[in-house]
Structure formats: structure tokens, C-alpha cells
Image (tube, rainbow, N blue to C red; front, side, top):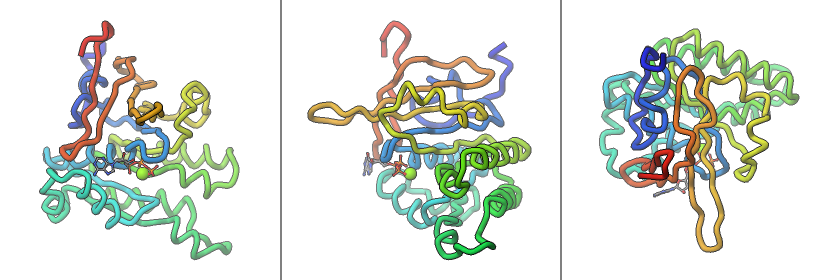
Length: 246
Ligand SMILES: Nc1ncnc2c1ncn2[C@@H]1O[C@H](COP(=O)(O)OP(=O)(O)OP(=O)(O)O)[C@@H](O)[C@H]1O
Ligand SMILES: [Mg+2]
């Protein structure tokens, strides 16, 4: 049955192996991790690789400006020398609407609302005919919504909208990095098709990074924790077989 599912390559070294080929087409997948785990860079690389392969891709930055996203990506991924060309040709769109700034500026009743965010996202995707999307990050929505019910309702509205637009998305979310077991019970995670988690484990003299696929609806995937590095030529995720072989 698994063979019939259409998949889209993430283009990220090791991640497609963990996903047994790639992300299921039109799935809405969250990338969860602690601060600095690499959520923004991983979702950027997913779009960069697909844009390079000729698939229009849009990065929706909710917490940082487009310039900041591009600047950081160029600083880390020094071998991605064609970022500007892809942006110039509209194959890669970095949309920095910064609703967090708008929210700060308008604390009165006609505040920039969640409804505006969803319709903004929809028009960017429709105009650019993008097929791959990153939304960075949805943690902002929790701050905006005030209570859990509105937050879950807003997540549902966002994901059903993305589904309707037929895009394959990575949506980043911040979690406390140590909460590995508790994470599975977060109710808002159940509405997504997939969950990729980036863990940071503190050891005495270093921090190790590992990735895990917690779920991926309709597709088999690796259940192993995979160490990863962020290098100047992109993420390197080291996948192991069930027997522990590299
Ligand atoms: N030049 C570099 N080379 C390699 N890795 C780097 C470099 N600069 C930053 N990094 C790594 O990238 C991480 C930041 O990645 P990213 O911004 O994607 O994290 P994030 O999970 O989105 O963080 P946040 O929660 O703050 O948004 C840093 O913690 C660091 O480990
Ligand atoms: Mg980030």
C-alpha cells in the first residue's frame, strides 16, 4: 500500500531516508523542537531544495523579517550561492509579514487577527502557485489566541486551509527540548499529518542533536532517533537501520 502514496522529496540528506522517500504529497507536517534546534533552517532547506528542483516554494515567516531569514540562511548555508537567483525568479518566496510586530503596534480591538494571517497566507500561496510551504512558527498563534480552545481552532483553520490549497507544508513549533514523553500527548499535535521532532540533548561537554519522526499519516517511516548536524552545505541527518547500521 505504501508504494501508492505519492511523496515529495525534502532534498535534505538523510531525511528522505527516514521518511522512506519523502513527505507524503499534500501533507501538513510539524517540525517541533527547542530553541535553536534548527527548525527554521530545516524548513528553509526543504524549500530551497525544492525551489532549485523547479517547484515554486514559499516561506512564511511569522516571527522574523524576510531579510533576517535570508541573512541567517546565507550565513549558515554558505554553499547555497543561488538563493538570490531563486528569489529573483520567484521560485523561492520569503514572505515576512511579521504579524508579531503588527500585533505589538495594534493592541486595540481591530488588532491584526488570526483571520488576516490565514487570508494573507492563502493569497501568497495562490499568487505564487507554490507547492511547498513552510510556516515559521505556529507558536505565535498560541500567544495570539489567548486560550487553548481558540488556539486549537485556529490551528485547525490553518491546516484545513493549507490542505485545500494542495500544498505540502512544514510548520515549525517550539517545545521545551527535554519534554520527549509529554510531547506525544499534546492535543494540538493530533490534527497534523506528521510530526518531526528535533531534540537537543545536553551532555557534560557538548550538545548533541537528534531527529525523530513521531508520526507520518499514511506512510511507513523510520522509528529510529537519528543524529544530525547543520553544515554549510545543509543538514546532514545520519540514519541508522533497525540493526544500528549506518
Ligand atoms: N554558521 C553556522 N554553522 C552551523 N550551524 C549553525 C551556524 N549558525 C547557527 N547554527 C546552528 O543553527 C541553530 C539555529 O537554527 P534555527 O534558527 O533554525 O533554529 P530554530 O530551532 O529555528 O530556533 P528558534 O527557536 O530560536 O527559532 C543554532 O542553534 C546553531 O546550532
Ligand atoms: Mg526559528
